Image (tube, rainbow, N blue to C red):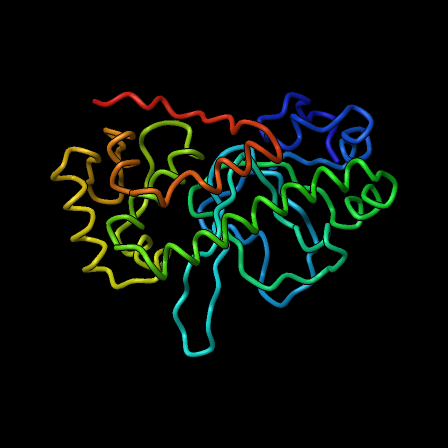
Length: 246
């Protein structure tokens, strides 16, 4: 714990906790930097800490024994790791690591479990977040199975944009291919298509969102169902991007 921890939270779950519920975990919250690729959870391991992300984006990544990683969920300032603790287990199934560097608040798993046992309202509220994450991963599975790559990419860029501090974020074609579970040449072609329509600008390792509404149109209904459910269950997601075309 640190006496210098700021008490103004950017994390939207911490923002929405009642004062009594926040008081149960506030003394244990430690502000930490979260550089690129920082592991937050390791597959098939005990959860030792929970992270409430303030800035940056974490990817929940599934892996099959033969190799090949695919992103199945995104977490930004709207969410947290450690959802299995809320469901009564202490093991995580997938890897979770930072895909866009940032920062957040870390709380020991034992402290959160104790707080959950002490407050039914805290547990109910965080279970609502678990539901939104499950809804997001469910729609990701549907989109990955049924949608065209350009639609999938548009949806994924919109989801990253929701969680980014502005219209610029740094990510390579190779990493996008891993996140989408496709070959890198396919991602390159899809990026070129979106760039040709003036929706994004892509340079080496950087994506700039130029026309968010255009990306929504390309996504063709694959974006927003999960986001609408977050708003219904938690509240309106507090987007921080500027969303101004250049």
